[in-house]
Amino acid sequence: MSAPPSLRARLAGGAPLLATFNLLPSPEVVELIALAGFDLVIIDLEHGPHDLADLRRALTAAAGHGLPTLVRVRTAAAAEIGAVLDLGASGVLVPHVESAAAAAAVVRAARFSPEGERGANPWVRAAGYGTREGWFAAANAEVAVLVMVEGPGALAELGEIVALPGLDGIFLGPMDLSHALGVPGRHDHPTVVDALRGALRLAGDSGVAAGLFAPEPGAARAWWQLGARLVAVGVDAGLIRAALTATVTAARAAEGHAVTSPSVPPRPRAVR
Ligand code: 3PY
Ligand code: MG
Image (cartoon, rainbow, N blue to C red; front, side, top):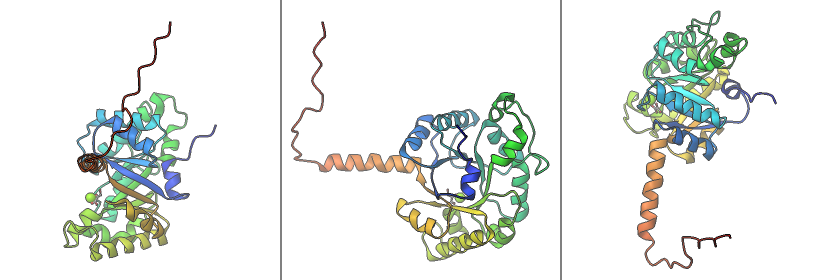
């Protein structure tokens, strides 16, 4: 059986992708995200408290379900990018990249020579601890590299960013953009939405994939239709909280509901 296409390949073509953010350092939550049917999970080290051991557990849980993983690192440091890729992330997402030069440095950190300068060690988990033939070339071919466009510098240099060789995609952050554009917290303000639409157009013209965060699921289809290849809807913590709150609300509102059947099934008869 041939291996499924890499996240990098799926970003380059095929059906639009649906993700959500994993903020809670829990492999069980990653499994629930896989079982729910998302195409990939974005494991969020920028806003989540995961350490590298938590990340390894999350990656193992995802791999058990064939769920691709994009890891949002905390910083653009080459050592951090290398560490999450060595652990086995399908791709790396770097927040707050504010220039074409910074984006080029991200690509260098994520790709082995001759395409970049990623620290080379073939005995890491991602390389099957030394068992993966042709590891360096395979990693260069498969790893997805995305930078976040969420500040004024990135918007100003977007044309150069999307033209960078080796960069697979940009990912737009409406929350940070709302702050950068003077309407803090208003991710759906027309100024923010115009910036998002303009960035999607530019990425589409350049052929690089574009993704973005959408707090609400209802917006996903519209963003796909506007050219987004990847929409990340919601954050696990918020989705779980909303489901718990809805359950409490529904239970408290359910006064007068007639209980017509026992909720506990009868005990089976003992077999002799
Ligand atoms: C943003 O909207 O700024 C993000 O980083 C999404 O997580
Ligand atoms: Mg952000």
